[in-house]
Length: 502
Image (cartoon, rainbow, N blue to C red):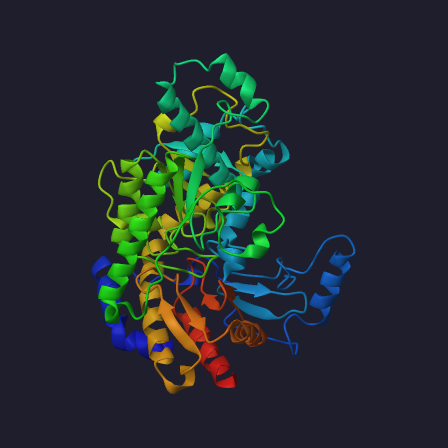
């Protein structure tokens, strides 16, 4: 199915492009020569008996109820994940959107064998106070080469949740610093005393505005901003922070232009109303948004909608955080998803957070949002040098193989194939709201019910494809950047097979 769609829609364009550049199209075997040629399932169901037994053993000391499979990472390669039973699965979810290039990429394994990497791993530093002499070089030749436009400062952190919480803290401190009159204005005795009792003015009544269905992590601050699923939040004390509505677009987009424009206008008006009304109670110091609301159901909005969010936040003095933990590192066909918003100079986000596919985590920001005193954004590790080295090598490989462009073109071809399949009788009454075309391989669709979605995911796994869900009844794709035409043929063919079984 995929091959037919590629030949009819974009194969000629791709051929012209590669001829004009004098190069051939990228193949995953360029980076992973021993990648399997396709899935292989040995057991009746996945996970099989060995995988189930492995989870039961873990159950003796750790909750295994979130296990999907128990992989054998030593045997996994490229886009194929091998489980405890020896089943070889095409992984189009990349763990949880967190593997950039694939499993056991030889260039990354070679990096791990170097003295530089080994010594960084065995002498893990408390980076805030004892950074290695190579720290500046490692970041300037790695993470800082992909810094978002206008953001030349970097705080490395441990995960996406901590990256977002670091951005929250920076926002609160910069907001109060602005109210106080600048970085050189000293704290008052009342501020210093009251903060130790968690009272104002030292612990100010400020807030972070997030959006319904958004997900920003599971730590205390980030969980207060998370609005995707109740199970993440129930029983946990939370900050009294506002949530704005996010547009509920109708698909296909081309058939609902006026309705979707009206919906986005409604949501923008409600968002600005919250910003205005909060000023008299709990002022919004920061607004946080995912370029695609991922965990909450892969929810999209127009580029203009996001640009207006940013401009309205700026108008009302709130800092703006683009949470690119899941959308960053090329998955949407640009290195950062917010690049598509059409932001002009001076309109860029104040913070961009990242993790997942980068393997490292952190916050890009502006110099003016650096805290005015040391130890205000600080912890023991403040990241991990080996993850910074891993990210540097991955960035080098992404650039040298032009994998962001590869992902953009692969995504267009894949979307074309899915549109053809989902328009056929086999998908009637089962598939709806296909979305993400033009956003690389960041594609998703809804199924008729949560139960049908879960059944679909299980049958895909039993047929050799590991795929994920989100929201209540959404199926989402999160393949690696080396995912290409041959993988797409397997994916689309398996989706068609499983739809026939439902």
